[in-house]
Amino acid sequence: MSARKIADVLFFLGLAAIIVAGAFFTLRTYRRLMQPLVLRGAVIKQDSDARKQSPIANVVVSSPDGLALRDATTNFSGGFTIAFRRSVKMGEPIRLSFRNPDFQPLNFEDKLSDKLYVISMVPLRNEMAATQSEPEVKVSNVMVRYSTQSRRTDNVGSAVKTFQVINMANLPCRNQQPCSPDGKWKAQVESASLDAGQGNVFRDARVTCIAGPCAFTRIDTDNFSKGGQIINVTVRNWSDTTTFLFQAEVFHSQLDNIVRRTYPVIFGRSMNFTLPSTAEGPTLEADMNGGQIVFPLGPTPILSWASCEVRVEKNESKDYRCELKQGYDFR
Image 1 (cartoon, one colour):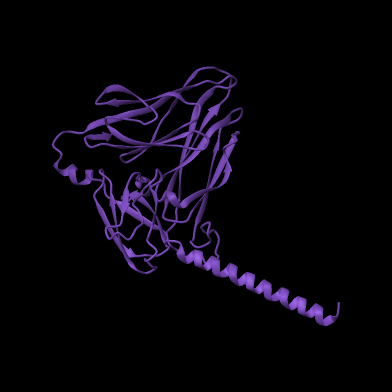
Image 2 (cartoon, helix red, strand yellow):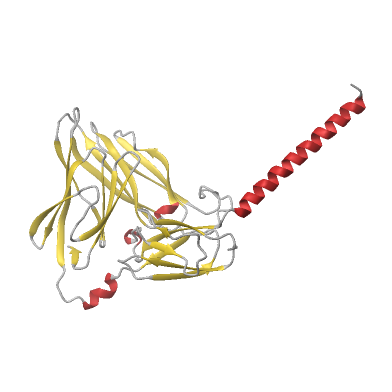
């Protein structure tokens, strides 16, 4: 083949490559433009103490102007995602309403952007506390009791630790690690560890976010799921300050059908605890005005004195978050 023919072949191959690359770029750009804009946010309880800023589940997020494709509902972590119609562009003013029967209605206005939205809602109880005439029922000595079957080891207790990941939302990262997973926002990374003591090991360890914009966090390093004498976890947070609950069961010797106890972590009017996947027949015990009452914890906890949410993790452990109802208070 002559040099001219070789040059012609190379020319046409290069031209074909340019055409294919251009078509691919055009198709990708078209798909991106056709995708609706999405707003991501988290709803938390308003409080000056970051440990009491519990995520709020089941908040209905809607667009009064009909700009959203559909309403959204916050999940266990308080996170939500709401997509807008293709006619809505970045920078346009939007209005959103946030509704939950236990919180004051909230209307939100801003210009649409891709920043992280953290919405704080005020509990209705703040309005009613001043006019409440009946004395509050005092709830104390709260304990969770459950049983498990263990053929080789005995649970001799549980270890609990809370830790915070202090950060501020919507600070550009500018390649200064640590950053959010997409590299856009400044993040903070914190670690926590538990030591079971010589001769003991941890099992059924779990880590859950209990306050702050939990939707914008992730576990970077999991050195707790497999257990051991010393376990640790590393958490990344790219929004406002969050609070985590680190908990595990301590095992030492062999026993079957043991009864185990754990104590919830209480901040303000919120109560948080987790149960391992092996937990059977869990009950919540508490003293109310001096008398002890036992409440069975079914798949969907129904308590006369608190509203509870439960989430089942991938390892089948369960996270519980309960908020006291009007007329009750932790002592």
